[in-house]
Image (tube, rainbow, N blue to C red; front, side, top):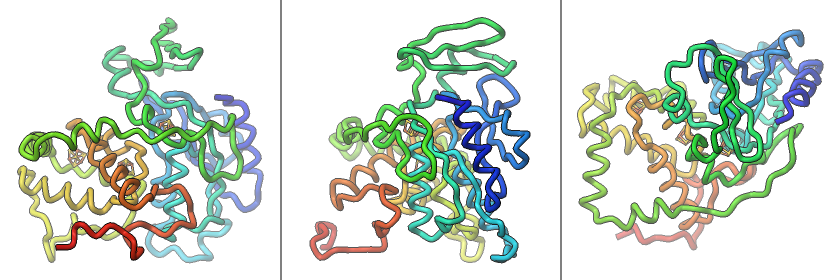
Length: 325
Ligand code: SF4
Ligand code: SF4
Ligand code: SF4
């Protein structure tokens, strides 16, 4: 990744009269962590980084800005937010535009062609208790990891996030400026989901019961999801109370049914929910099942096209009707 080019494009974006600030990445305060950077004066652009450690989505922050209570059209001017977006982020942005969550003209998108990001848990297991900020670059299929002044070479596949091995669109699908070469779309790949589907029902049920029994209902998966941005949520409602507060397996099942249904045809596979889950629930397995069904049943890919109508609010007479008794 050409970070210098990114900084130049960021400076150009901030030089525009209609851009109020830029959301990108900066080094975190310790170890392998990165943080979101909210950059307003151009002098702060040197903070910007782009590396295989940039494994979080920044799209949610756009919505936090746009949904503050009491904001008027006037207060939002000059209103563009510049944002650094990878392929998966661009799909979230496409859906936000389609759902009218944010108008296209309120965003200035600096797209980055993405070679994949590192799984935080894998790298922290490999290099435990690193507190000094570390650096990672990619060279010839390896990660070069600099920790406390020492360099280590690790094959990329050992640390790559699982979701990046099945990524369809590493190049953003929507942008105003693109950094890096356009990378071709990759084929569909749902082998692991098909293998799970083939298991007997009792085995699948037992698997999810065991997984959901670990959930502590912290709602981090909801809070981080760029597709979950409504200010009123049934999960928080006390009247009516759709869900009891207790984190037992049956209520957790209900929570996951709500979460999963809510995301049918809307999840763009960024992996944020699984990344932040403190109990390591394999949420991407559910998300990928939704993605597979949307593709196979309705030939629909979420976030591919900002003009495509959302899956759950449209129907065609030729849609499959096997679920109707
Ligand atoms: S899912 Fe694709 S675009 Fe997103 S971080 Fe992984 S490789 Fe990059
Ligand atoms: S982040 Fe994990 S533990 Fe927290 S509510 Fe979601 S699934 Fe449960
Ligand atoms: S459900 Fe998970 S993978 Fe899907 S959009 Fe939300 S955070 Fe990303």
